[in-house]
Amino acid sequence: MTIINEKDSKVYLERLLEKYSAFFDIKKEYDYHGIKFSAYAYFHSLNEKYVLTRKANLWRAKAFEHVLFLEVDRVDTDLIEKMRKLIKEHMEPELVREGNKYPCEDHMYSYLTLVILSKEKIENDMIRAVRRFHFDKGYLFSFRGHSEAHIACVDMESELVYTNFAAREMKKTLQSVFEEKKIEAVPQRGI
Image (tube, rainbow, N blue to C red; front, side, top):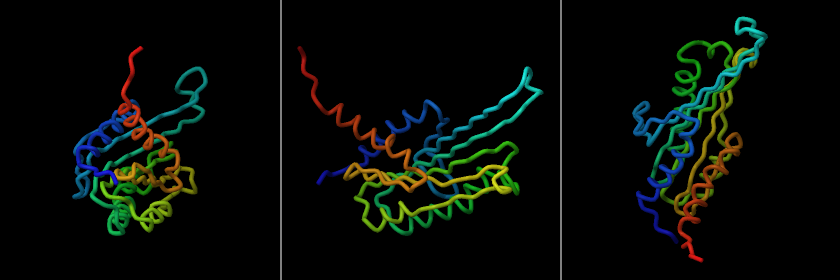
């Protein structure tokens, strides 16, 4: 059994944030509704098609992603429910709709992502809870897009990553941080 200390999760988080920094704006030490997150990452993309000039616009689509990084000792039922409540009651209305009835015009999608770094091993019932975690909300029959929750739990002790179905594509990126650490640990031989 590997003993994980706080420094290991900090190193992992720094390497992960370095990967995110290419496309995301990042704020460290982020306090959101009384919860102290290690970091917050924000992404916005605007795609549009027009003919000759921007005034002759055929279509526009805005995409957003909000990622909150949280370091905890262990993942339990209370934490999962707290994160579900945070998404439904705060992240979706404030970050996606910005307090309005619907998101901004030309909104295509918003991903509300939680990355939880657990120092202790994640139990099987919590792995099931993470995999079953679901939140998807459409606006005006999806004419104003939709928002979707992604959740990923990183088990620092066993170096495994668990995600819900919506976040399955994140797993490779999150797992690659562990792989980089293993490659650096292998001593290099001179010729």
